[in-house]
Amino acid sequence: MNITIEEIRKQLTRQLPGEEAHIPMSPGGRGRSSEAIKHAKNYRESAVALVLYEKHKELKGVLTERSPYRGLHSGEVCLPGGKMEDFDQSLKQTAIRECVEEIGLKYEGFELLGELTPVFIPVSNFSIQPFVFHYTEPPIFIRNNREVAEIFSFPLRQLFEENIIKKTSIELAGRGTLDNIPYFDINNKIVWGATALILHEFKHLFVGNSQ
Image 1 (tube, rainbow, N blue to C red):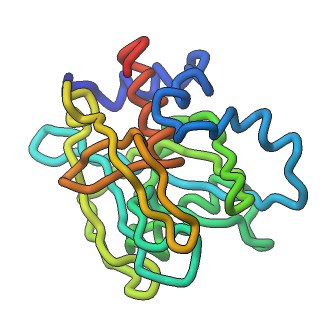
Image 2 (cartoon, rainbow, N blue to C red):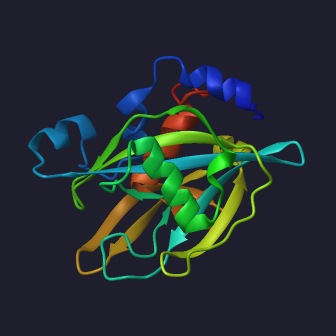
């Protein structure tokens, strides 16, 4: 499926699929973000960016692989982003700033297309606001070596391929193993958890009832 920036912009102005689109990619027993956050205390606000750019007349998205660290999300594949700082004026600014810091993009290249449904992560107590941006310049990526192990792009049409969603077991450092976890197989990377929920809602904008 080939979609355009204008089609994405148009779909993001309509009612979002919301948490119904998260469910197929949710680890078993996770529950809905809107319910989980009601019981959270002192959770932190954060933002991520689904950055889209055009190359050879094809739309591409950007993902990163986190550097190893002593934390809950070490080594995971994710969208660029991070926690809101006191000096950020908005979550949108947080998302852009993190892209600048993590993958070296320029502030002036970002065009906001819209927002997706927030995702709450109970294990790390973060509420994530996803933004969708069109990056209007040919991107030159500069990796933040401390935070990012790898930056990679993928054709957006890949999200709509028949066998893109698979299941696997995920080993969590010091927290056991999760079985039968749905994930996107993108560039032979396991894209699961909050990132998978966000990408699946984006996919759901164009393919109703996608699984």
